[in-house]
Length: 199
Ligand SMILES: O=C(O)CCC(=O)C(=O)O
Image (cartoon, rainbow, N blue to C red; front, side, top):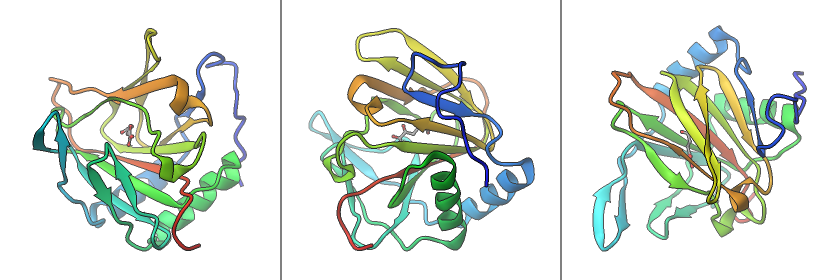
């Protein structure tokens, strides 16, 4: 089983680690194919008194009852783990030591799909969650910054893993900005803990 070094020299000041070749090309291609069959939804979000479509498609799989509400507005109700997603969850746990109860998928259809600056601090994940993020398909820029600080860019490649360690969500914000470049679909899977539901 692949065991990751959690704090390599390359990113000593950020509470994240990036592993560009976590999956082999064949594994990443097969997983991308599997993700095409997941139940993607176009959700709506209420912000500043307005209801608008979330600028990406979303899906959620996980343990029964591990509902996930974000931005006090979007409620995601997990479908049961598929065997591919459960295998990937276990592999990431074996490599990082972190446990996960849900995976939220984001599908960025074009460069106009995005996620703005935010942290993932929903109480349902418990205190100081570790979040593991797999990227598939087109490469997109992921930016992370200390709150009030300068941002660092990561180009998240097909088959890569980005780990946001415990504490990251309290001190840092992250985003995947829109781009005017022509990009095709990118799929992102974020494995997260959850304190509710049934095991
Ligand atoms: O797509 C990504 O790499 C980031 C997704 C993200 O920030 C989130 O789901 O909270």
